[in-house]
Image (cartoon, rainbow, N blue to C red; front, side):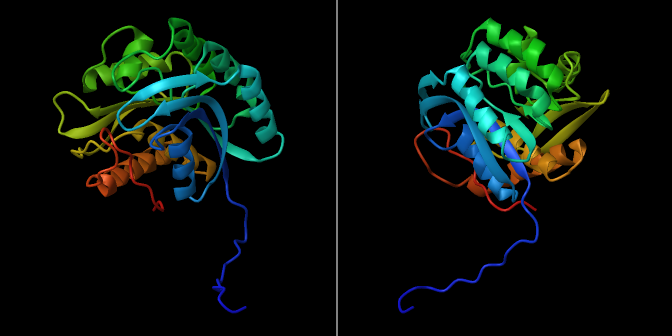
Length: 276
């Protein structure tokens, strides 16, 4: 047909792996559902989503949060799980204690569960009540394959400051006592370190994930991206150790690629692209 470009597509022989994100929507596109789906796609994984909250935010900050009713969160979960072969799940901001408890009730149907406990805003303000924090520990952590708090979130969950690598290692072990198979305390730029360091507790063994520190303000969504990349790799059949190492590498590369961007007046987003 004249004037219509012709494209040649290669039909894949197998279906893609399917991953699910249960999280809030970020209107600025740098974190939450938007970052998760971009990360899934970059890994060749078909992404599905359950939205727990709407946020009005940009690179500067969060202007408002509207939680989705837990009954409708349940309806979204049922719709996805009844129809699609979800192989791994990542949770982000669950918004209310009721939604944390709801996701915990669904946990037997949520394979390879990666729990990113979004509890603290980038400003340092706590987003939710102590009831929500307790629900994570008592209800959701026991079902998780891996939990990925950052330093501030680990501090909130444990009720003490987690500031450096030694603190992070101890925090990972203490949080593992609540039942997850693995805990990653995401350190970022830990005090006294020239690297981005994460403390990993896995099956009783402690190790460190390290990468060169990237000096950039384009770091909005790093935690979401790390957890989503871990879930994507688990859905493809990676071991947990390999999934974590691959996710660390993916985030590092994304930071490098976006370091020179100028999107927005605050903390800009990470780059994304095909994983290797």
